Every structure is written in C-alpha cells, then in structure tokens.
Length: 225
Length: 225
Image 1 (cartoon, each protein chain N blue to C red):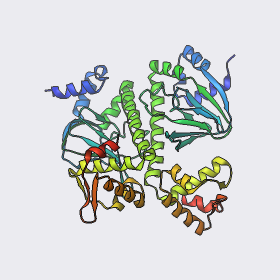
Image 2 (cartoon, helix red, strand yellow):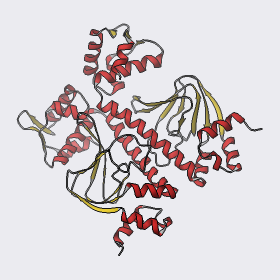
Image 3 (tube, rainbow over the protein chains, first blue to last red):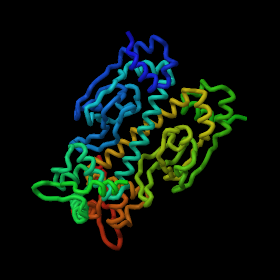
Image 4 (cartoon, rainbow over the protein chains, first blue to last red):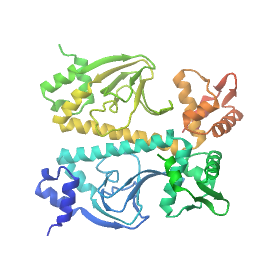
C-alpha cells in the first residue's frame, strides 16, 4: 500500500521524519506527487505555492525574471537536492518571485506546500528545516550576486557564453552583441570590446551572419575559475 | 537591579520573551550591551559573530564589499529594527560576509551571538525568529539586486547620486565618471552618457574641477520612483 521508495526518499531528505506522527506522515505522502517535467518546461512562476520540489533525476534552474523578460540564473538544483523557494506558503516572509524551469527532462517529487505548512505549524523542526534551507539558498544567491556585481567582465562573459551554449545545446550562439549586453545587464560597447578580445585569442569566432561560435571551450572555461 | 528599559526593548523585539526561563533571561541580559557608534564606524566586518544588533537611534548600513574595495549597499537599518545577519553564529547556514557601518551617530543594543545561539538550541521559537528575520532580509536583498540588475541606468544613477549626497552630507560629489562607474559596476561610457543627459536636463552640473553638483534634487528623486 505504501510507496516504499518514497518513504526512503523522505527519510533521507527530511531529518524530522522520525518525529512525525503516523497521521502526519500519511497526509504528507498523500500530498506528494511524482512528476516528470520535460526539458525547458516552466515548473514554478512565483505566483502560486508549487510546493517543496525534490529532484530525483535531471536538473532544475532557478532564476529571476524582469518585466522586460531579462533573466538572471541564480542556481541549479541537481538530483538529491531540494527546492524550497518554490514553497512560498511555507516561507511567508519571502516577498520576491523566483522562477523554476526544468533544464533537462527531470523526475521530481513535489510535496504539497499546504501539507508542509500545516506540518511546520505543529513541528518546529519542520519549520526550522525549511527556513534553514531558504537561508542556505540565500548564501548561494549572494555568491552569484557577488560574482555578477564584482566579477571582471571577461569572466562574466565567458560564463554567459558557456551557459548559453549548454542551454541551447550548441556551440553556435545566434545573439547580437546588443542582445548579450541586455541579458548581462551591461553596455554593448563593453560586450563588443570583450568579444573582440576573445576572437583575437582564438576562443570564439564572431560574424554578423552566424553570430558567435565557441572554438576553444577549455580556455573559455579556464576564465570562469 | 534590572535595567527596566532593556527588558521593555526585549519584550517588544523578541516574541518569545515570555517563553524564556528566568535563568535564560538573566543570561540574555548579561550578554547584552548598550553601545554608541559614531558616524562612519565599522561595526561588523563579516569575520566574527558580532551578535544581534538592535537599533535605538541613528541608522546602520549593511553592504557587500569586494576584494577591490567596491561596495554594494544592501539596506539600511533604522530605529526599532534589528540586524540579524551580524549574528553569524546563530545562522550557521549563512556563508557570505556582510559589512555593517553606522551611517550616523547611533545608539544600539547588541545581544551576544553566543547567548542567542545557546538559547535557540533550547527554544525553537528563538531559532525560528532569527531564521525568519534572515529570510526577510533575503527578500530585501533580492529587491535591491533586482533593482541593480534589471533597473534602467537613469534610475540607478539618480539613486546613486542621491545616496552619495546624503552619505557625505553635501550636494557636491567629488567623484570622477570612472569612479562612479566602478562603484556602480557599470562602464564609464555608460555613466558619462547618462551624466551628460542629466546635465542637459539641468538636474546636475559636472566639471573636471568640482566634480558633480546636484542642482535639482526633486527631479532626480522623481527618476528613482
């Protein structure tokens, strides 16, 4: 009757599992669903409480989205990891919107936000676990922000090109300098100057018709370290 | 024997005060200090656990600092508010460094981080209170980050100039375009172009010898809305 592998997953993920009553566990299980998300699908758009997402295979991408459609990737969530920022009803002090997409075909287990919230009102350990996970995400996000705000332009641009190539699954990036500047929150002049340098170093080629093509991924990657 | 006004402050600040034992309250009080910080003084530099800072008068500024000395102001803390990110030992999942300066002469009460941490191990309410305060700061920080990453340049520059003027207490800002670009994480060309526009609109004047002078604060402020 019980889904044993789900129980195993919950035991491993939630350190408070042993402190839950039998009834709470049943409610928790009933509110949980196995879901398959195809590559590129939007899973959470900041509005509703999607719930706590546990990744079993594939990967998710968490990002901010501006009104003009500009995205900033905050971090990725891999198998064995959990997304708590999608459970906005659990973390009622969070007032900003994040978006979550599946970056590959992904298998997840989604624990209903209401069930978790209900539990965390009775079990402080569950509340503390969710809050600590959020604070830990906070640290990850701050790291990204510091990279963006403080990092040198060559590094940022290298990371952008590699991310973009991996996102579209091709080394040919058909974006104009203007578009790249817009995505990176920088100026076209600055982006063009740096791309020219990458071309002169043989790391990429750039042409009006083909856009940018990555030629030396290894050296580009070295710039990101 | 007891400092009644301190008890009043704690009662108002910490919703778990009534649930604390008499011994815990005494330890809490003993670990707390009234401190006066003069304007511009660094209070917390990210390394040690300074403790939970309650602001009674004045204001504090919380910011990130890059290795090159570039600062990003995250938010300010005003009378009646609390700084929890300076209590790193309470929030052990936080792995980034923030800096806190007093922006004016400020009177604060600092609750020792160890005493708080010790209490929060026994009283889940204290732990939850600290974590929720941190998550709430997270929201504030994300707002700032979204402004920086997504906001149009005119708005960002207007905010920077007004912030700077208020920080130095003068409408004359003696920074070069290059320095402003560095502080804002932007390119000099972009900053110069926008300053030229502000000059043409009569909002500021700009000269090599005097730097930038704010002429029309009201219109500059309108840009920030």
